[in-house]
Length: 359
Image (cartoon, rainbow, N blue to C red; front, side):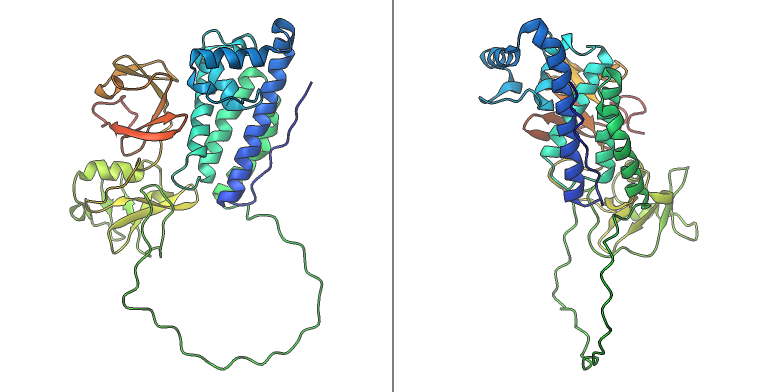
């Protein structure tokens, strides 16, 4: 049995095109998971095994089997049971190694993040998701591993600007018609009381014009103008922490711009992004910045790095929900990924967090 459901390639970095790629990726993964599971479990447990599993989990109060209807080809159902239930039948199908279970948890986190976005996803977010699925698929020898390759190449070309979308078909030639130019009109006058477009959250797509001047981050932790003069004295608050957060996502050429209102921006993975503010007092709901490439769980009074198994004691671990994956942003915001969506649970610093994870 094979599924071979295609993954549609995005034609641009627009919200609709990226969501098209994401949903067809998840649909294709779900079909492969279902086929692999039925090939093993229909023989071991009988054709009605999934119905019995869903009923058992509901009686146990599993938060991954809420409601009455569940699909055996829904990746969130399959992977959550596999990752968090020691008696999961899916552990008879897949390898159940630490790296495989961690891979499943990463995909679940991606799913929660994509379905509960507070802002539009980027091509880089889509690339991260595709990599997580590909790594899991390669480990478990799922056919989707090969189908993801064209998606990865398309995303790379979108991020670099090499792909500008499919060219529309040429319109048939029509005879030219001479049209008299319209009479000249006065240029529009901007309203003196016009309200500037509001800024996004830190990490969001930049709004408004992009200033021409560029400021460069140096390897010595400074920020200089085009003449090489430091502008550290213009930055309010913890200067070193701000500079680290602005340059953690690797803006193009290590350069940023600064708008008149103090907003700092730069090009990150091909998109213009708000990186932070020169001054203080710009509070926002939710996490700031960009996610670092690390994944964590809370176990007792410690957080554990899922990829290495290294632990770190931290006060925020004590109240953390079990079976929850956490990530940290470049600003140190710790985010929990629950089935109902991500939530900010606190802020960590480079001194009290895993060494090297926050610069």
